[in-house]
Length: 543
Image 1 (tube, rainbow, N blue to C red):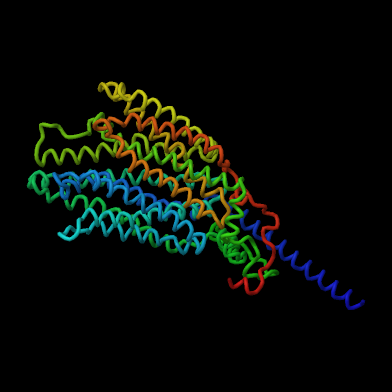
Image 2: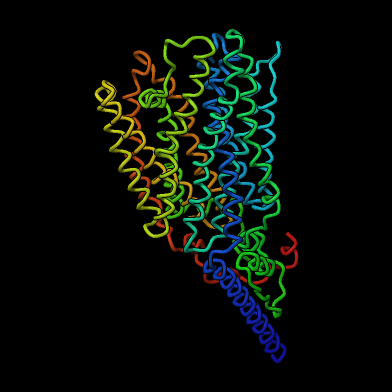
Protein backbone atom coordinates (compact mmCIF):
# COMPACT_ATOMS: atom_id res chain seq x y z
CA UNK A 1 0.00 0.00 0.00
CA UNK A 2 2.82 2.30 0.96
CA UNK A 3 4.62 1.40 -2.27
CA UNK A 4 1.50 2.29 -4.28
CA UNK A 5 1.28 5.65 -2.54
CA UNK A 6 4.92 6.40 -3.37
CA UNK A 7 4.43 5.42 -7.04
CA UNK A 8 1.28 7.54 -7.24
CA UNK A 9 3.11 10.50 -5.74
CA UNK A 10 6.03 10.02 -8.14
CA UNK A 11 3.72 9.81 -11.19
CA UNK A 12 1.85 12.91 -10.07
CA UNK A 13 5.11 14.77 -9.59
CA UNK A 14 6.29 13.79 -13.10
CA UNK A 15 3.01 14.93 -14.66
CA UNK A 16 3.21 18.27 -12.87
CA UNK A 17 6.81 18.70 -14.06
CA UNK A 18 5.80 18.02 -17.69
CA UNK A 19 2.88 20.43 -17.33
CA UNK A 20 5.21 23.08 -15.92
CA UNK A 21 7.65 22.56 -18.79
CA UNK A 22 4.81 22.71 -21.33
CA UNK A 23 3.54 25.95 -19.82
CA UNK A 24 7.02 27.52 -19.76
CA UNK A 25 7.76 26.48 -23.33
CA UNK A 26 4.36 27.72 -24.51
CA UNK A 27 4.92 31.06 -22.81
CA UNK A 28 8.39 31.38 -24.30
CA UNK A 29 6.92 30.76 -27.74
CA UNK A 30 4.26 33.41 -27.14
CA UNK A 31 6.85 35.88 -25.87
CA UNK A 32 9.12 35.35 -28.87
CA UNK A 33 6.24 35.74 -31.32
CA UNK A 34 5.04 38.86 -29.51
CA UNK A 35 8.50 40.41 -29.92
CA UNK A 36 8.36 39.86 -33.68
CA UNK A 37 4.76 41.07 -33.98
CA UNK A 38 5.37 44.23 -31.94
CA UNK A 39 8.84 45.13 -33.25
CA UNK A 40 9.35 48.61 -34.67
CA UNK A 41 10.32 49.00 -38.31
CA UNK A 42 14.07 48.42 -38.50
CA UNK A 43 16.96 48.10 -40.90
CA UNK A 44 16.40 44.33 -40.90
CA UNK A 45 12.80 44.79 -42.15
CA UNK A 46 14.07 47.10 -44.89
CA UNK A 47 16.73 44.54 -45.85
CA UNK A 48 14.16 41.71 -46.08
CA UNK A 49 11.91 43.93 -48.18
CA UNK A 50 14.72 44.81 -50.59
CA UNK A 51 16.11 41.27 -50.86
CA UNK A 52 12.65 39.83 -51.55
CA UNK A 53 11.70 42.75 -53.79
CA UNK A 54 14.69 42.33 -56.10
CA UNK A 55 13.36 38.88 -56.95
CA UNK A 56 10.03 40.30 -58.09
CA UNK A 57 11.84 43.07 -59.96
CA UNK A 58 13.78 40.39 -61.87
CA UNK A 59 10.66 38.27 -62.41
CA UNK A 60 8.68 41.15 -63.89
CA UNK A 61 11.61 42.33 -66.02
CA UNK A 62 12.11 38.88 -67.54
CA UNK A 63 8.41 38.35 -68.23
CA UNK A 64 7.76 41.84 -69.60
CA UNK A 65 10.93 41.95 -71.73
CA UNK A 66 9.75 39.07 -73.91
CA UNK A 67 6.77 41.14 -75.10
CA UNK A 68 9.29 43.47 -76.75
CA UNK A 69 11.94 40.85 -77.52
CA UNK A 70 9.46 38.63 -79.40
CA UNK A 71 9.13 41.32 -82.09
CA UNK A 72 12.93 41.45 -82.37
CA UNK A 73 13.09 37.66 -82.58
CA UNK A 74 10.56 37.76 -85.39
CA UNK A 75 12.68 40.15 -87.43
CA UNK A 76 15.72 37.86 -87.17
CA UNK A 77 14.33 34.31 -87.03
CA UNK A 78 10.68 34.44 -88.04
CA UNK A 79 9.40 33.51 -91.50
CA UNK A 80 8.67 36.77 -93.28
CA UNK A 81 10.41 38.60 -90.40
CA UNK A 82 7.61 37.78 -87.99
CA UNK A 83 7.11 34.90 -85.56
CA UNK A 84 4.28 32.55 -86.43
CA UNK A 85 1.33 32.57 -83.97
CA UNK A 86 2.50 29.24 -82.52
CA UNK A 87 6.10 30.44 -82.12
CA UNK A 88 4.99 33.67 -80.45
CA UNK A 89 2.63 31.77 -78.13
CA UNK A 90 5.29 29.19 -77.26
CA UNK A 91 7.87 31.81 -76.30
CA UNK A 92 5.37 33.74 -74.18
CA UNK A 93 3.45 30.88 -72.52
CA UNK A 94 6.47 28.75 -71.58
CA UNK A 95 7.25 31.01 -68.64
CA UNK A 96 3.81 30.90 -66.96
CA UNK A 97 3.72 27.11 -67.38
CA UNK A 98 7.09 26.85 -65.66
CA UNK A 99 5.94 29.36 -63.04
CA UNK A 100 2.96 27.17 -62.15
CA UNK A 101 5.29 24.21 -61.60
CA UNK A 102 7.71 26.30 -59.54
CA UNK A 103 4.98 27.72 -57.30
CA UNK A 104 3.75 24.27 -56.35
CA UNK A 105 7.21 22.71 -56.04
CA UNK A 106 8.97 25.45 -54.07
CA UNK A 107 5.88 26.12 -51.95
CA UNK A 108 5.96 22.52 -50.75
CA UNK A 109 9.75 22.37 -50.36
CA UNK A 110 9.87 25.57 -48.30
CA UNK A 111 7.52 24.00 -45.74
CA UNK A 112 9.39 20.69 -45.84
CA UNK A 113 13.04 21.80 -45.81
CA UNK A 114 12.88 25.42 -44.67
CA UNK A 115 12.59 28.88 -46.14
CA UNK A 116 16.31 29.62 -45.83
CA UNK A 117 17.43 26.37 -47.49
CA UNK A 118 15.32 27.09 -50.57
CA UNK A 119 15.72 30.87 -50.68
CA UNK A 120 18.29 31.69 -53.33
CA UNK A 121 17.99 28.42 -55.24
CA UNK A 122 15.07 29.82 -57.24
CA UNK A 123 17.14 32.93 -58.01
CA UNK A 124 20.02 30.75 -59.23
CA UNK A 125 17.62 29.03 -61.62
CA UNK A 126 16.40 32.41 -62.92
CA UNK A 127 19.96 33.68 -63.43
CA UNK A 128 21.15 30.54 -65.25
CA UNK A 129 18.06 30.36 -67.46
CA UNK A 130 18.21 34.06 -68.32
CA UNK A 131 21.87 33.79 -69.28
CA UNK A 132 21.06 30.64 -71.26
CA UNK A 133 18.47 32.55 -73.31
CA UNK A 134 20.91 35.35 -74.06
CA UNK A 135 23.52 32.98 -75.52
CA UNK A 136 21.12 30.61 -77.30
CA UNK A 137 22.03 29.72 -80.86
CA UNK A 138 20.33 28.60 -84.05
CA UNK A 139 21.44 25.52 -86.01
CA UNK A 140 20.10 23.21 -88.73
CA UNK A 141 19.32 20.54 -86.15
CA UNK A 142 17.49 22.79 -83.70
CA UNK A 143 15.45 25.97 -83.83
CA UNK A 144 16.43 28.84 -81.56
CA UNK A 145 12.74 29.35 -80.77
CA UNK A 146 12.58 25.80 -79.40
CA UNK A 147 15.70 26.42 -77.30
CA UNK A 148 14.21 29.66 -75.95
CA UNK A 149 10.97 27.89 -75.04
CA UNK A 150 12.93 25.37 -72.94
CA UNK A 151 15.02 28.06 -71.24
CA UNK A 152 11.95 30.19 -70.53
CA UNK A 153 10.16 27.21 -68.98
CA UNK A 154 13.16 26.63 -66.68
CA UNK A 155 13.25 30.33 -65.86
CA UNK A 156 9.54 30.14 -65.07
CA UNK A 157 10.19 27.42 -62.48
CA UNK A 158 12.56 29.80 -60.70
CA UNK A 159 10.11 32.70 -60.95
CA UNK A 160 7.37 30.48 -59.56
CA UNK A 161 9.50 29.59 -56.57
CA UNK A 162 9.93 33.26 -55.78
CA UNK A 163 6.20 33.78 -55.10
CA UNK A 164 5.66 31.60 -52.01
CA UNK A 165 9.21 32.04 -50.69
CA UNK A 166 9.29 35.85 -50.81
CA UNK A 167 5.71 36.18 -49.56
CA UNK A 168 6.24 33.86 -46.59
CA UNK A 169 9.69 35.19 -45.69
CA UNK A 170 8.32 38.73 -45.61
CA UNK A 171 5.14 37.91 -43.70
CA UNK A 172 6.94 35.79 -41.07
CA UNK A 173 9.58 38.44 -40.38
CA UNK A 174 7.20 41.43 -40.47
CA UNK A 175 5.61 43.17 -37.49
CA UNK A 176 1.81 42.94 -37.42
CA UNK A 177 1.20 46.66 -37.91
CA UNK A 178 3.38 46.96 -41.05
CA UNK A 179 3.04 43.48 -42.56
CA UNK A 180 0.65 44.53 -45.34
CA UNK A 181 2.84 47.43 -46.43
CA UNK A 182 6.01 45.33 -46.40
CA UNK A 183 4.40 42.63 -48.55
CA UNK A 184 2.96 45.27 -50.89
CA UNK A 185 6.35 46.96 -51.21
CA UNK A 186 7.90 43.60 -52.15
CA UNK A 187 5.22 42.87 -54.74
CA UNK A 188 5.29 46.45 -56.11
CA UNK A 189 8.77 45.79 -57.45
CA UNK A 190 6.99 44.12 -60.35
CA UNK A 191 6.05 47.59 -61.56
CA UNK A 192 9.65 48.80 -61.42
CA UNK A 193 10.77 45.66 -63.23
CA UNK A 194 8.30 46.27 -66.05
CA UNK A 195 9.32 49.92 -66.26
CA UNK A 196 13.00 48.97 -66.37
CA UNK A 197 12.40 46.48 -69.18
CA UNK A 198 10.73 49.20 -71.27
CA UNK A 199 13.53 51.69 -70.51
CA UNK A 200 16.29 49.20 -71.33
CA UNK A 201 14.52 48.29 -74.58
CA UNK A 202 14.30 51.97 -75.54
CA UNK A 203 17.98 52.56 -74.68
CA UNK A 204 19.12 49.49 -76.64
CA UNK A 205 17.02 50.40 -79.69
CA UNK A 206 18.31 53.98 -79.59
CA UNK A 207 21.92 52.81 -79.19
CA UNK A 208 21.65 50.59 -82.27
CA UNK A 209 19.80 53.19 -84.37
CA UNK A 210 22.59 54.05 -86.79
CA UNK A 211 23.69 50.43 -87.13
CA UNK A 212 20.11 49.30 -87.75
CA UNK A 213 19.38 52.01 -90.33
CA UNK A 214 22.44 50.94 -92.32
CA UNK A 215 21.70 47.24 -91.96
CA UNK A 216 20.64 44.83 -94.71
CA UNK A 217 16.78 44.85 -94.61
CA UNK A 218 16.70 41.19 -95.63
CA UNK A 219 18.92 40.03 -92.76
CA UNK A 220 18.62 42.60 -89.93
CA UNK A 221 21.66 41.17 -88.17
CA UNK A 222 21.91 44.19 -85.87
CA UNK A 223 18.57 43.27 -84.23
CA UNK A 224 20.05 39.97 -82.98
CA UNK A 225 22.30 41.49 -80.28
CA UNK A 226 19.47 43.84 -79.27
CA UNK A 227 17.15 41.13 -77.92
CA UNK A 228 20.08 39.27 -76.36
CA UNK A 229 21.16 42.36 -74.40
CA UNK A 230 17.57 43.14 -73.40
CA UNK A 231 16.93 39.65 -72.01
CA UNK A 232 20.47 39.06 -70.69
CA UNK A 233 20.48 42.18 -68.51
CA UNK A 234 17.61 40.61 -66.58
CA UNK A 235 20.05 38.44 -64.63
CA UNK A 236 22.08 41.41 -63.29
CA UNK A 237 19.79 42.36 -60.35
CA UNK A 238 19.45 38.67 -59.51
CA UNK A 239 23.23 38.25 -59.29
CA UNK A 240 23.45 41.29 -56.99
CA UNK A 241 20.71 39.97 -54.68
CA UNK A 242 21.88 36.34 -54.62
CA UNK A 243 24.43 36.74 -51.80
CA UNK A 244 21.88 38.43 -49.54
CA UNK A 245 19.31 35.71 -50.18
CA UNK A 246 21.75 32.96 -49.36
CA UNK A 247 22.77 34.65 -46.10
CA UNK A 248 19.34 35.69 -44.84
CA UNK A 249 18.47 33.87 -41.58
CA UNK A 250 15.72 31.29 -41.17
CA UNK A 251 12.44 32.75 -39.95
CA UNK A 252 11.93 32.19 -36.19
CA UNK A 253 8.42 30.92 -36.93
CA UNK A 254 9.76 28.06 -39.08
CA UNK A 255 12.40 27.18 -36.47
CA UNK A 256 9.79 27.30 -33.73
CA UNK A 257 6.75 25.63 -35.31
CA UNK A 258 8.23 23.25 -37.92
CA UNK A 259 11.69 22.44 -36.61
CA UNK A 260 10.07 22.71 -33.15
CA UNK A 261 13.21 24.22 -31.66
CA UNK A 262 12.00 27.03 -29.42
CA UNK A 263 15.40 27.65 -27.86
CA UNK A 264 17.04 28.35 -31.25
CA UNK A 265 14.05 30.38 -32.45
CA UNK A 266 14.18 32.53 -29.34
CA UNK A 267 17.81 33.36 -30.13
CA UNK A 268 16.93 34.09 -33.77
CA UNK A 269 14.40 36.70 -32.67
CA UNK A 270 17.37 38.90 -31.74
CA UNK A 271 18.13 39.22 -35.45
CA UNK A 272 14.68 40.60 -36.14
CA UNK A 273 14.16 42.94 -33.20
CA UNK A 274 17.81 43.90 -32.81
CA UNK A 275 17.72 43.32 -29.07
CA UNK A 276 19.13 40.67 -26.78
CA UNK A 277 16.42 38.13 -26.03
CA UNK A 278 17.75 35.99 -23.19
CA UNK A 279 17.09 32.27 -23.25
CA UNK A 280 15.64 30.89 -20.02
CA UNK A 281 18.25 28.39 -18.74
CA UNK A 282 15.70 26.53 -16.60
CA UNK A 283 14.35 24.47 -19.49
CA UNK A 284 17.00 23.28 -21.92
CA UNK A 285 15.12 21.61 -24.73
CA UNK A 286 16.14 21.14 -28.34
CA UNK A 287 12.78 19.99 -29.66
CA UNK A 288 9.20 20.32 -28.43
CA UNK A 289 5.92 18.54 -29.04
CA UNK A 290 3.82 20.66 -31.40
CA UNK A 291 1.54 20.03 -34.41
CA UNK A 292 3.66 18.41 -37.12
CA UNK A 293 3.15 18.59 -40.88
CA UNK A 294 2.07 15.21 -42.22
CA UNK A 295 -0.30 14.07 -44.96
CA UNK A 296 -2.82 13.06 -42.32
CA UNK A 297 -2.51 16.39 -40.51
CA UNK A 298 -2.80 18.29 -43.82
CA UNK A 299 -5.97 16.39 -44.69
CA UNK A 300 -7.37 16.91 -41.19
CA UNK A 301 -6.66 20.65 -41.30
CA UNK A 302 -8.28 21.18 -44.70
CA UNK A 303 -11.16 18.80 -43.98
CA UNK A 304 -12.58 21.63 -41.87
CA UNK A 305 -14.68 23.97 -44.00
CA UNK A 306 -13.44 26.98 -42.02
CA UNK A 307 -9.92 26.25 -43.31
CA UNK A 308 -10.72 24.89 -46.75
CA UNK A 309 -12.91 27.87 -47.68
CA UNK A 310 -9.95 30.20 -47.17
CA UNK A 311 -7.78 28.18 -49.58
CA UNK A 312 -10.64 28.08 -52.12
CA UNK A 313 -11.14 31.83 -51.70
CA UNK A 314 -7.48 32.75 -52.17
CA UNK A 315 -7.00 30.31 -55.07
CA UNK A 316 -10.09 31.21 -57.07
CA UNK A 317 -9.70 34.96 -56.50
CA UNK A 318 -6.17 34.76 -57.93
CA UNK A 319 -7.37 32.57 -60.83
CA UNK A 320 -10.17 34.98 -61.78
CA UNK A 321 -7.94 38.03 -61.48
CA UNK A 322 -5.11 36.63 -63.62
CA UNK A 323 -7.44 35.70 -66.46
CA UNK A 324 -8.22 39.39 -66.92
CA UNK A 325 -4.80 40.71 -65.84
CA UNK A 326 -2.95 38.77 -68.54
CA UNK A 327 -5.79 38.79 -71.05
CA UNK A 328 -5.93 42.58 -70.99
CA UNK A 329 -2.65 42.58 -72.88
CA UNK A 330 -4.58 41.46 -75.95
CA UNK A 331 -5.72 45.07 -76.32
CA UNK A 332 -2.27 46.62 -76.10
CA UNK A 333 -1.96 47.06 -79.88
CA UNK A 334 -5.18 49.10 -79.92
CA UNK A 335 -4.00 51.23 -77.01
CA UNK A 336 -0.54 51.79 -78.51
CA UNK A 337 -2.08 52.89 -81.82
CA UNK A 338 -4.44 55.25 -80.00
CA UNK A 339 -1.61 57.03 -78.16
CA UNK A 340 0.49 57.30 -81.33
CA UNK A 341 2.85 54.38 -80.74
CA UNK A 342 1.30 51.68 -82.89
CA UNK A 343 2.54 50.31 -86.19
CA UNK A 344 4.99 52.62 -88.01
CA UNK A 345 3.78 55.01 -90.66
CA UNK A 346 3.20 53.24 -93.98
CA UNK A 347 5.42 55.78 -95.72
CA UNK A 348 8.39 54.27 -93.91
CA UNK A 349 10.03 51.23 -95.47
CA UNK A 350 12.97 48.92 -94.87
CA UNK A 351 15.12 49.43 -91.79
CA UNK A 352 13.52 52.80 -91.02
CA UNK A 353 10.18 51.05 -90.47
CA UNK A 354 11.86 48.40 -88.30
CA UNK A 355 13.50 51.05 -86.12
CA UNK A 356 10.31 53.06 -85.75
CA UNK A 357 8.30 49.94 -84.85
CA UNK A 358 10.75 48.85 -82.13
CA UNK A 359 10.92 52.38 -80.73
CA UNK A 360 7.12 52.70 -80.69
CA UNK A 361 6.72 49.39 -78.83
CA UNK A 362 9.30 50.42 -76.22
CA UNK A 363 7.96 53.93 -75.61
CA UNK A 364 4.32 52.83 -75.75
CA UNK A 365 4.81 50.10 -73.17
CA UNK A 366 6.75 52.50 -70.96
CA UNK A 367 3.79 54.92 -70.99
CA UNK A 368 1.27 52.17 -70.18
CA UNK A 369 3.34 51.00 -67.19
CA UNK A 370 3.63 54.51 -65.76
CA UNK A 371 -0.01 55.40 -66.48
CA UNK A 372 -1.71 52.62 -64.52
CA UNK A 373 0.39 49.76 -63.22
CA UNK A 374 2.87 51.51 -60.90
CA UNK A 375 0.43 53.97 -59.27
CA UNK A 376 -1.93 51.10 -58.40
CA UNK A 377 0.68 49.25 -56.36
CA UNK A 378 1.50 52.29 -54.24
CA UNK A 379 -2.14 53.21 -53.71
CA UNK A 380 -2.50 49.78 -52.11
CA UNK A 381 0.64 50.45 -50.06
CA UNK A 382 -0.99 53.54 -48.56
CA UNK A 383 -4.24 51.87 -47.50
CA UNK A 384 -3.60 48.15 -47.01
CA UNK A 385 -2.84 48.32 -43.28
CA UNK A 386 -5.52 50.88 -42.43
CA UNK A 387 -8.38 50.01 -44.75
CA UNK A 388 -7.63 46.30 -44.93
CA UNK A 389 -7.02 43.62 -47.57
CA UNK A 390 -10.61 42.46 -47.97
CA UNK A 391 -12.20 45.88 -48.65
CA UNK A 392 -9.49 46.66 -51.22
CA UNK A 393 -10.12 43.32 -52.96
CA UNK A 394 -13.90 43.83 -52.89
CA UNK A 395 -13.51 47.34 -54.31
CA UNK A 396 -11.11 46.17 -57.00
CA UNK A 397 -13.33 43.36 -58.26
CA UNK A 398 -16.46 45.58 -58.23
CA UNK A 399 -14.78 48.44 -60.14
CA UNK A 400 -13.15 46.00 -62.59
CA UNK A 401 -16.52 44.35 -63.27
CA UNK A 402 -18.01 47.75 -64.15
CA UNK A 403 -15.02 48.77 -66.29
CA UNK A 404 -14.98 45.51 -68.28
CA UNK A 405 -18.75 45.73 -68.84
CA UNK A 406 -18.31 49.23 -70.29
CA UNK A 407 -15.25 48.29 -72.37
CA UNK A 408 -16.89 45.10 -73.67
CA UNK A 409 -20.44 46.17 -74.45
CA UNK A 410 -19.44 49.63 -75.75
CA UNK A 411 -16.32 48.37 -77.52
CA UNK A 412 -17.42 49.23 -81.07
CA UNK A 413 -18.38 52.79 -80.16
CA UNK A 414 -15.28 53.29 -78.01
CA UNK A 415 -12.99 52.35 -80.93
CA UNK A 416 -15.00 53.98 -83.74
CA UNK A 417 -13.40 57.45 -83.69
CA UNK A 418 -10.11 58.92 -82.48
CA UNK A 419 -11.94 60.90 -79.79
CA UNK A 420 -13.80 57.82 -78.54
CA UNK A 421 -10.60 55.79 -78.57
CA UNK A 422 -9.10 58.24 -76.07
CA UNK A 423 -11.91 57.28 -73.70
CA UNK A 424 -11.03 53.60 -74.26
CA UNK A 425 -7.38 54.37 -73.42
CA UNK A 426 -8.50 56.08 -70.20
CA UNK A 427 -10.63 53.07 -69.24
CA UNK A 428 -7.73 50.74 -70.05
CA UNK A 429 -5.35 52.66 -67.75
CA UNK A 430 -8.04 52.81 -65.07
CA UNK A 431 -8.41 49.04 -65.32
CA UNK A 432 -4.66 48.59 -64.85
CA UNK A 433 -4.81 50.90 -61.84
CA UNK A 434 -7.64 49.05 -60.10
CA UNK A 435 -6.11 45.67 -60.80
CA UNK A 436 -3.09 46.69 -58.73
CA UNK A 437 -5.07 48.86 -56.30
CA UNK A 438 -7.19 45.78 -55.84
CA UNK A 439 -6.98 42.01 -56.24
CA UNK A 440 -3.63 41.74 -58.03
CA UNK A 441 -1.87 42.86 -54.85
CA UNK A 442 -4.23 41.45 -52.21
CA UNK A 443 -4.29 37.96 -53.77
CA UNK A 444 -0.52 37.90 -53.20
CA UNK A 445 -0.72 39.17 -49.61
CA UNK A 446 -3.55 37.16 -48.03
CA UNK A 447 -2.24 33.61 -48.79
CA UNK A 448 1.02 34.58 -47.08
CA UNK A 449 -0.87 35.39 -43.88
CA UNK A 450 -3.98 33.24 -43.55
CA UNK A 451 -2.51 29.73 -43.00
CA UNK A 452 -0.52 28.04 -40.22
CA UNK A 453 3.28 28.13 -40.44
CA UNK A 454 3.64 24.45 -41.34
CA UNK A 455 1.38 24.87 -44.42
CA UNK A 456 1.80 28.59 -45.18
CA UNK A 457 4.22 28.25 -48.07
CA UNK A 458 2.43 25.24 -49.59
CA UNK A 459 -0.92 27.04 -49.43
CA UNK A 460 0.53 30.21 -50.96
CA UNK A 461 2.04 28.08 -53.74
CA UNK A 462 -1.35 26.45 -54.43
CA UNK A 463 -3.06 29.85 -54.53
CA UNK A 464 -0.39 31.36 -56.79
CA UNK A 465 -0.44 28.34 -59.12
CA UNK A 466 -4.20 28.73 -59.47
CA UNK A 467 -3.59 32.31 -60.58
CA UNK A 468 -0.97 31.24 -63.07
CA UNK A 469 -3.42 28.70 -64.47
CA UNK A 470 -5.71 31.64 -65.15
CA UNK A 471 -2.86 33.42 -66.93
CA UNK A 472 -2.25 30.38 -69.13
CA UNK A 473 -5.96 30.15 -69.96
CA UNK A 474 -5.92 33.84 -70.91
CA UNK A 475 -2.79 33.66 -73.05
CA UNK A 476 -3.59 30.37 -74.78
CA UNK A 477 -7.38 30.37 -74.92
CA UNK A 478 -8.22 33.99 -75.51
CA UNK A 479 -5.32 34.54 -77.89
CA UNK A 480 -6.98 31.93 -80.11
CA UNK A 481 -10.45 33.39 -79.68
CA UNK A 482 -9.72 37.05 -80.38
CA UNK A 483 -9.56 36.68 -84.17
CA UNK A 484 -12.82 34.75 -84.58
CA UNK A 485 -14.81 36.58 -87.25
CA UNK A 486 -11.80 38.64 -88.34
CA UNK A 487 -8.71 40.31 -86.85
CA UNK A 488 -9.51 41.21 -83.21
CA UNK A 489 -13.24 40.85 -83.99
CA UNK A 490 -13.92 38.78 -80.87
CA UNK A 491 -12.05 41.06 -78.45
CA UNK A 492 -15.22 42.80 -77.27
CA UNK A 493 -16.73 39.46 -76.24
CA UNK A 494 -13.52 38.53 -74.43
CA UNK A 495 -13.81 41.74 -72.41
CA UNK A 496 -17.36 40.73 -71.52
CA UNK A 497 -16.06 37.35 -70.37
CA UNK A 498 -13.52 39.17 -68.21
CA UNK A 499 -16.38 41.09 -66.61
CA UNK A 500 -18.01 37.79 -65.67
CA UNK A 501 -14.83 36.53 -64.02
CA UNK A 502 -14.45 39.79 -62.09
CA UNK A 503 -18.03 39.34 -60.87
CA UNK A 504 -17.25 35.84 -59.58
CA UNK A 505 -14.19 37.28 -57.83
CA UNK A 506 -16.50 39.39 -55.67
CA UNK A 507 -18.11 36.21 -54.33
CA UNK A 508 -14.81 34.36 -53.78
CA UNK A 509 -13.56 37.34 -51.76
CA UNK A 510 -16.32 36.58 -49.25
CA UNK A 511 -14.48 33.32 -48.37
CA UNK A 512 -11.24 34.97 -47.26
CA UNK A 513 -10.65 36.51 -43.81
CA UNK A 514 -9.61 40.07 -43.07
CA UNK A 515 -5.98 39.81 -42.03
CA UNK A 516 -5.02 43.39 -41.14
CA UNK A 517 -3.56 44.02 -37.67
CA UNK A 518 -3.84 40.33 -36.71
CA UNK A 519 -0.98 38.02 -35.84
CA UNK A 520 -0.23 35.09 -38.13
CA UNK A 521 -1.04 32.73 -35.26
CA UNK A 522 -4.51 34.26 -34.77
CA UNK A 523 -5.13 33.90 -38.51
CA UNK A 524 -4.09 30.24 -38.56
CA UNK A 525 -7.48 29.25 -37.11
CA UNK A 526 -5.74 27.02 -34.56
CA UNK A 527 -5.93 27.14 -30.77
CA UNK A 528 -2.75 28.75 -29.44
CA UNK A 529 -3.23 27.89 -25.77
CA UNK A 530 -1.24 24.73 -25.20
CA UNK A 531 0.14 24.78 -28.77
CA UNK A 532 3.37 23.38 -27.30
CA UNK A 533 2.58 20.15 -25.47
CA UNK A 534 5.96 19.88 -23.79
CA UNK A 535 9.49 18.68 -24.56
CA UNK A 536 9.76 16.06 -27.28
CA UNK A 537 10.95 12.52 -26.45
CA UNK A 538 14.65 11.97 -27.02
CA UNK A 539 14.23 10.13 -30.32
CA UNK A 540 11.84 12.79 -31.68
CA UNK A 541 14.27 15.57 -30.77
CA UNK A 542 16.61 14.18 -33.38
CA UNK A 543 13.96 13.95 -36.05
